[in-house]
Length: 224
Image 1: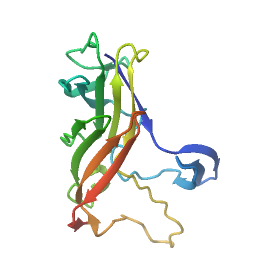
Image 2 (image 1 turned 90 degrees about the horizontal axis):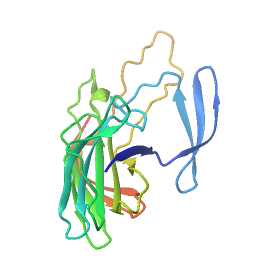
Image 3 (image 1 turned 90 degrees about the vertical axis):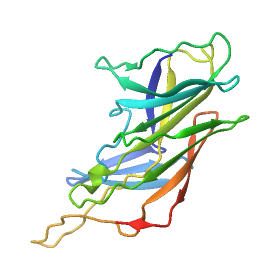
């Protein structure tokens, strides 16, 4: 069994135009509504490593046999080789008969996240918890991970052509800031959110087409 990975952003570009200081994108969302996005020429990321199909180098796969739901793979490391192939060991082979349910996740910071997955009658769910890293004014942004999830259910060797293709969805939002006019002699050194709920649990729901939705339940404590 071999794997491939792509990123699902939920938006597709309609048009773009650039000035000497910024680039403006008009995006169409999955429900048809539009969004104008401004990105500065040299934006500051609000997390240290934002994953995409171009930067992803490792993800994990858990899988179950459809018949009897026996464990087939458990948090297997899938890593990108220097030759551009996704590799893992020991290699798994398709069962002679029957189907396999695959669940994947990626963690840009290797925080030790270990989500759990559940398969019911035509239902596929997952669960994980998340806590914001401790605030550090010098590197708060770089501490933030990017978490992505994907699934392919009910697959057999006969039902696919080549690799199992995962389409990843982001579980956390990334925020970029565009600073407007700043008075002469003033230097913007940092931007900070206060009163942010610092932890919570998330329930993942997977559709047959691989779509992932997230239902967050935040805890009551807050931090900067």
